[in-house]
Length: 382
Image (tube, rainbow, N blue to C red; front, side, top):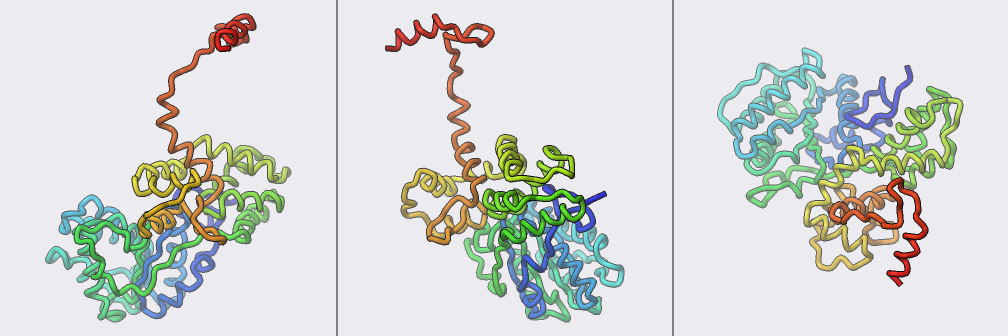
């Protein structure tokens, strides 16, 4: 069976069409070699998890590192209870580590001593117990807030000087936003001043869209015409979920016959289907559009007005979320033409739903035109 275009969860090389992780983050291996702590942020469903799972496996398979991607999302249920958050996080990590690393690279049994130190003391014990430098990718870090986020970051900072023999050699924090935009009761992020850089995972470029679609052609013989590929890029601006969703809709539903090439017309039709259906990814945009600081920027852009005195952090927040991009000519624009159609529809949904139902008097009960009634209505109007 051939692979397929994926629109849900991380991609797997044996099942899904996907691009190499290192091609999207070409400098990351150097950053890891330099024993750096760093942040990678990108909007939802842009391939962060896919890229880092692939890179972790690549690093481990090289025989030079023990690398694994874990998540702290389970701790977000306990943002003001560090004790409970640590227990949940370490339990989740144990399962992930057992599933992804060979026995000789797994940590000793976790110990649960004083709250507020459990993560750092177990990372210290793990780093000392294995022969290779430990590389840890921590996903969903921005799901944590307040006391729990402060505690986790402080524990990472406290162990930082002891790397690589006694603490992870390199740690990457992965999320939707840069760490500067995380919600803290203290309002300060000075306790994580150890990061060397923040990296924004970019969308696919036009050549990468072509490369992804070419994988389908090589496995099935069904081609995407050059016009189709160009149109797909123009409509999506390389947003990975949209690129995959367009192709998936076409090859799995619209054009199942592999002898029929995918054309520009198919891409345009698939675009309309995605917009009308409001799939998961597009639906998640609606959630963000309810935030007031998002509305304060999106609405003037849509209406062609000046932004006025909006905080730079708010503008960067919308870029980080993938709603806006900086146009090469200058200024902020909606990230891609598909979003440009979706966003206004979302913003006026409440108004549309509140409009009264109009029942024209010039239609019969069967929905056919009654000429006499239409003429009478027009005369009354005139």
